[in-house]
Length: 133
Image 1 (tube, rainbow, N blue to C red):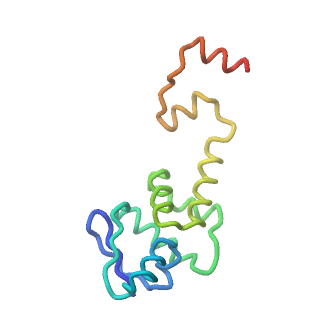
Image 2: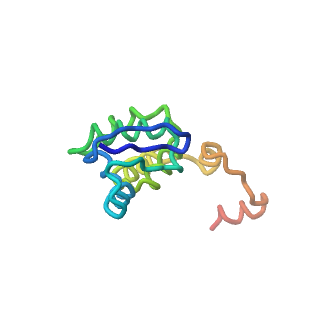
Image 3: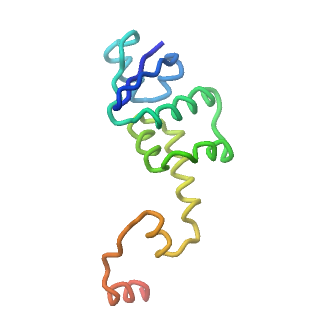
């Protein structure tokens, strides 16, 4: 068993076979031989880690379907992707980046800006020119 400590101090006790699906955690375990100590994960909060652990336990031997990915709606998707990237869990990164792509597919530039809260830094003239190109 491994103990994973999030940035907000929450500890998660997880079977090693589950935790090492994270390439980051696997490297820590291999390099530091810390199978019996606490592994700090300062860039992940407890709410996000709880969902990641749930995913890793559920899909240890298989990959998630699109419907299964929908179960994680209560988290901010960007926060989840950042945690998956920090923990280096390629399957999660791929699933949730695809979710982002599906989410913005066929949306206008204005709608995508609204979704991601991106301010338009082009003047009306610059934007008109870009649209013509």
